Length: 94
Image 1 (cartoon, rainbow, N blue to C red):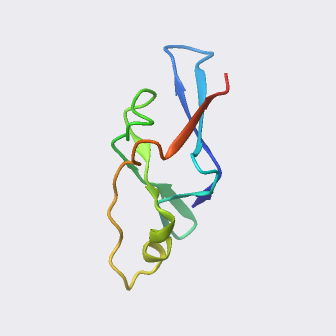
Image 2 (cartoon, helix red, strand yellow; image 1 turned 180 degrees about the horizontal axis):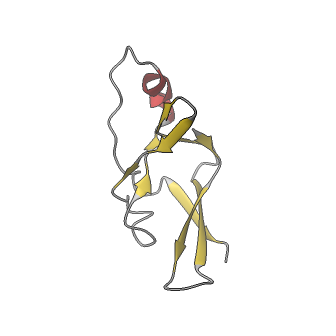
């Protein structure tokens, strides 16, 4: 699933703080997911260092070089891992 950003929320009650995560280099992010019929789910993994201060897990972000391997069922799926330090830029929205 190509995305330009995703959000995490922190705080005990509303209104919670809202944090926007984007690619540090401004490119689209490829989030790993599974599709079945008319439903889909985004995969998660433990948080990388950029997300750990905000949440206890993160969506699986595939490096751009792994996008075609993820989509090709005839190839081995790329390794699922947290995003490395510095891969994401974070901005407090609220």
